[in-house]
Amino acid sequence: MEQVAADLPMELIFSRVSVPRGRGKIEPLSNEETHDFLEKHWSRRVRAYSDDFTNKEAVAAIVRITKGNIRLIERLMMQVEHVLVANQLQVVTKEVVEAARQNLIIGPG
Image (cartoon, rainbow, N blue to C red; front, side):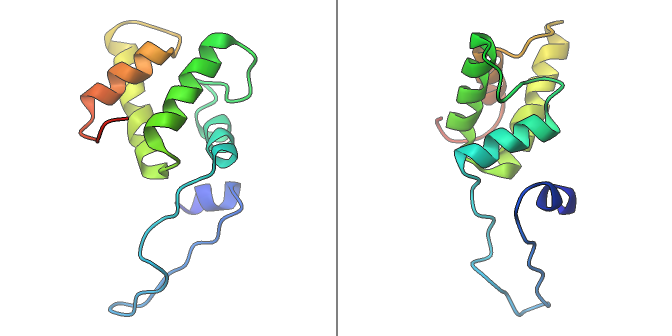
């Protein structure tokens, strides 16, 4: 989490035991922050700012499914890795992202 906070304009707030600060949750990333996060941490698989249609579709699916939830982005992208390896694929497509989403226990996307 510290690395993500350092890469994005985000401050981590730590609290003492039994003295919560804030609302106790991580605020969702904006679409731009989500694109930045994907570009910085998952660029080996997706190019968030590419003009390639396949990349744009895959990134749009990731943004739609995760709604900026950084923990869900990480879980989804790990599942994308599993789908790619299991099917001997190299390119992340919208279909790969959807297959990964179906294997996670999350609400409808």
